[in-house]
Length: 199
Image (cartoon, rainbow, N blue to C red; front, top):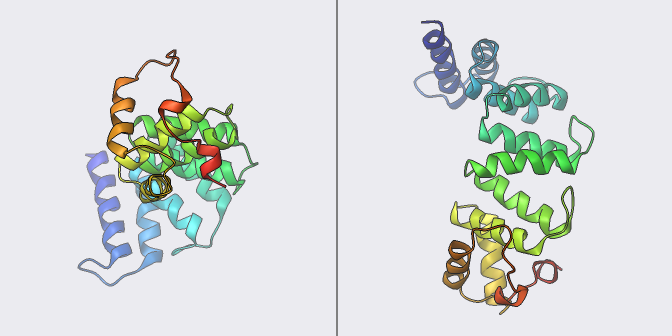
């Protein structure tokens, strides 16, 4: 019953935040999210963290956003993993730690969170927080595009248009064929250098 009650607060918060059936009231939305967040409703923790991150209905406070994203991450909430990773990558509300960002992006990407797959591809491409690995950068870029990440799709389209990769269908066939981490994949099979393409 308690879980249902907390879920009701989360639903009410969404109604106030979006102005669905009630006047929009971001302060009241934040209060409702906080009530549910205190009861460990991961979606409410995530949404409350977003409100603190953007300063919607509450004073913008990155450190409080980190607290609530972290609580949702404890429950394996993929969108919170992405946002907390983004904050670590950029040093917002926490000390900058690209290695921690990569770990969080990896967890979220494994749950098919598209933004995380794209950010992870960039970290591998630049060797930030993880060892440089063009093969993994390409794999995560394709995965992100397949999951609908618009930035990843644009980047693949630009690389294709510039003649720096084979057709996306060919790349996806390679991606599907190669699942082992130990494969000796010829870099030329991909037809691109992710690092060169980003310049």
